[in-house]
Image (cartoon, one colour):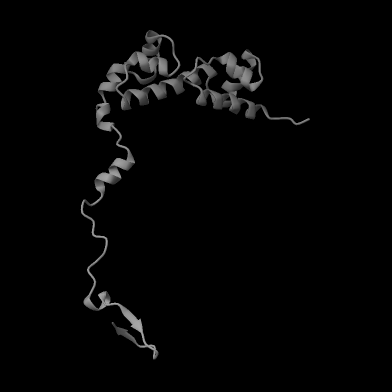
Length: 158
């Protein structure tokens, strides 16, 4: 029988929270992933990581919401649902508690998302290419002549 440390089980649950924060994920699902009861999981998670599983999951969601507010033009309601929360009011309250400002005030403190619009690399490369490309350099007169070898090994122009 192989024994796996409790910390590895807790890391598995933490990784699940990081990977699937956008789903309606709760402490029960995280505890199930770690193989603990809900109460034991909450105690062990707090001991290992210094915060409760619910707080950790909410923090991940708020960090992602902040990034979406900075770099997209999505509405606050859409961002709320995209990060896995179900109530815009609760989202606004949690965001304000985490960052000290409302989501709309947070967004106003950054440049418009259009300023961050990403241009595909293929277009950047195509735009950066010279318009008239010289494929070959002009060659001297002797190089243009066809050459042939004689029996002596001396090259003579034809």
